[in-house]
Length: 282
Length: 282
Image 1 (cartoon, rainbow over the protein chains, first blue to last red):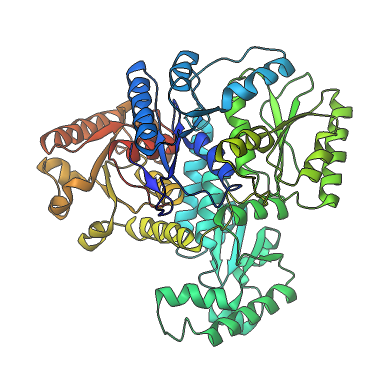
Image 2: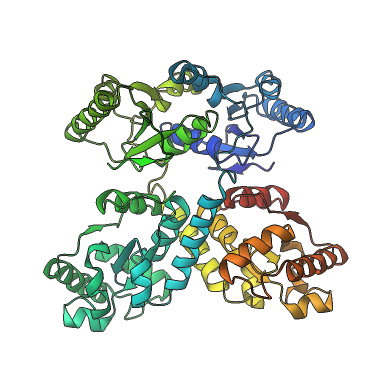
């Protein structure tokens, strides 16, 4: 339980606790999502995963009370705790308690016409061996492909990303594998491809799977410059030239594409799944 | 908007909609988490990301109403829509509407003593260039290291995972990079390491960063057998032998470790951050 300060501040920071009987990822997702609506509030966060016993619950209550006493501000607690007894222990701590399951489970029970199972949080657990293997295989696929595309690889790909160096293809492929179980290959457009202004021959049979990632020249320059400062490769002129020719190629060859300059890895992946109308595998 | 059936069923499936003005990842995470409490309910899901205009909102309302009419069951809608006008449009569709933001924002506003900003969902967006680069660097670190550990690599690692082949080290390293921005190296224990029953020399200076992943022999046998069916490498005998010697090495060298047999990638990563008391970087 170590606190990570999000910003420095002279006044006491508000502390957020993310409590879970499992990984804490759902509680963090909920809490972070809500806190983006309060950007000017500085806070530090403490995630306590695997709160699955009275002993751990008790230690967590004491930690929350200590923070409340030290800072003079009751911590804001986001909980996905499933066990009602453990939840009651935590809700009684000196804090503002937001419980995710409790809030939504009852109306869902009414609508679905059944009681919830009260099983320990399994949304990020190993629920299904097949889904797990699908993800692992997709990750291995992305890794095996990262050194260069081969035709037999393309055949098994769900999507093939095209772009010049440092447009974010590799992280996007890995995220597509982890989040959606999709097999994403990635083809870095090299000088020879841009010169020819045509699709590389190896990709011809797989036109339906192609998707281009573009980026603003200034942004690409900035990213490349962090790798190879003041190199020709990173120069703004070179970035402008490569991107111009890449866009020409995408247009001539009718490769669908979008500008990922201001997008996170998650946004790129989500946009791809949406635009390319790919069926996710998990 | 394509629906993915979770299970086949003769009766009409319940349809879940995940609606977001951004990627939809938060809505999916929260919705899936709730649905793990209703495991016997078969459903299909439709994610509609980037609902950021009245046109898209209107198309989505029509899609929801169509599903309701066709199936005779009102869809369950999980929303993280931020714009109150768009939210009202969707809430008026023929559905059961669960809104994650609306539910918690008001009590949070009261507690934090300020109004929320109503900015479009940015919890999976590019909020912060530095965090983005931290993640990208961590991903590149995991990739660069995946072919074998070098001493200079270990120096920059936040954690170094040890284990025999196919214990899940690589996916865990990638997830640590994506979710927590952590630099995770991975050292596959080879026959020579197991023979010597000592830590590989290259790892000696980095004892504080080491963490072992173990696995049940039957599980390892199963996983390896899918790669190399009926091979010596995949045989149960060989798996038992390797794991036995690996555990002996961990004990002798006092390497902290846990059994990841039934853990998902997320659980392994979360457990590591917790047990190794690593400070996350994002």
